[in-house]
Amino acid sequence: MPGGKRIKIIIDGREVETEAGTLLIKAAEDAGIYIPRFCYHEGLRPDGNCRMCLVEIEGLRKPVPSCMTPVKEGMIVRTNTPALQEHRKKVLEFILTSHPMDCPICDQAGECVLQDYYFDYDLEDRRYLEDRERKPKRVYWGKNLIYDAERCILCRRCVRFLDNVTGTRELGVFERGIHSYIGLFDGKKIENDYSGNLVDICPVGAITDLDFRFKMRVWFLDRTPSICPFCARGCNIEIHTNTDRLRNRFSSQRVFRIKPRKNQDVNGWWICDEGRYSYKFIDEGRILHPMSNGRKITWEAAGKKLREIIGNEIRVYLSAWMSNEELIYWKRLADLLQWKVSLVKRPDGDEDKLLRVKDKNPNTTGAKILGIKEERGNEEVSVVFHFPEFAPEQRIKIGIFTNEFPDMEGWELILPAAVFAEKEGHWTNFQGKIQKFQKALEPLGEAMDEGRIGEFFAGAFGIELPWDRQEMEREFLKEYKKWSGS
Ligand code: SF4
Ligand code: SF4
Ligand code: FES
Image 1: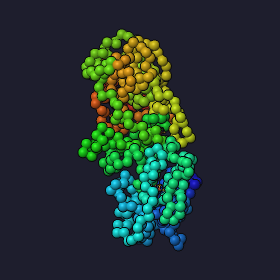
Image 2 (image 1 turned 30 degrees about the vertical axis):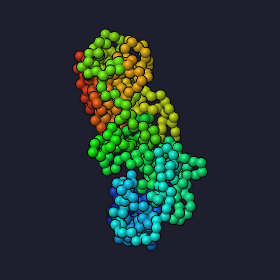
Image 3 (image 1 turned 90 degrees about the vertical axis):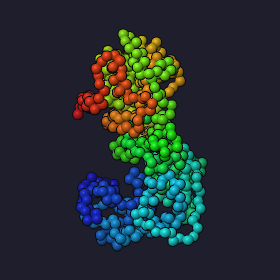
Image 4 (image 1 turned 180 degrees about the vertical axis):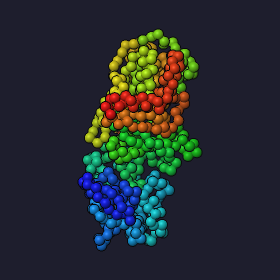
């Protein structure tokens, strides 16, 4: 375990300062020196089983695994000598005696370390003339996971994840030597809430994701940093998209997968399955145009409808899915129009000790900072964001929504809102951390972000309040400082 004391070591001739007790592989990586690895993963207990990460340490007769060796003051380490390169080549040759050469049809191709290391260290033709060992293929492990034992290099990352991270222990190593494979314990399936992380940590294509399998080559995906909206933790994610009609045979599907982005202070290396697999609403069932009583109308007609409500008592129900910037903008607009302001949000759900928190909204804290409370009113007109189910049964209901829902005919006016992946902004998570989400896609149809919809409202009511996201970001930060006392 790192002990807090700073020490100095030499790696490949460079002086590196690190914490005493840090594993050598990590100390090198932090200093920008990458040591190849299969079984080591920063988020898992080290296992030292693949021997790919061996390094030379001055004074020791044999190379040692850098993933099992803590640094010591004055250590002199070499990570890439000709002898180590030769050693890595042999490790690869050994793995490839039983690994199928099916990269062209493997989902992992393009992000597979075995493929990468083969090009870095091996590049030799096969010398092993025996038949490959045949093992189970296409084994259903539960939820979205498919296992291919022939591709498995037995690094045991998956076993350790289920032992040490979720504690659910569904997998073990069965049989011995060349016959070894990873299998489910009797009567078990992998049904835990973090199962998708197994696909990410498997260094090869042995665990594939039914939700993504054979849908898109990874090198055709664009990757945008974002934040998961499905609970108040705000796990850091990447949204993987493809909008290129030539490559994308699912032309209406733009988002192909969600992956975790490491953030030690928020989610570590992981995300939960709800955050990973709940992206379909981005492309499916969207509201694409302004609508009145279930019929499509123009924006001009929508402006006219808005002017008809002037003079009524109005309450606007802002949502805990709106960004900090959108919330502060709408609060100002409501104050200028003398509307009452409330908050609506998804009801609380399950939580656990790993990541998931009870609050299933990304920005309850942002609303709290601005003093927006969950109150219900009885005004003549309600303007409701995102959650139609919270609209009081008033005479006039106006909604700003992203997705279709039953009973849209009962709404005087519905305006199409962009989803989080179609705009940029910030949310404040339950720890009080402000985190940025970026735009991965253009809004579908005529959808607009809630700031621009606010500007449309302001225009319809004859108010000068331009939507300037960056200005609103600065204004929110002032409120945040008051709230946090910083
Ligand atoms: S399935 Fe993947 S993670 Fe698990 S042991 Fe095999 S190669 Fe490693
Ligand atoms: S824990 Fe919460 S924020 Fe993280 S991925 Fe799951 S739902 Fe999203
Ligand atoms: S990464 Fe060190 S032995 Fe596998």
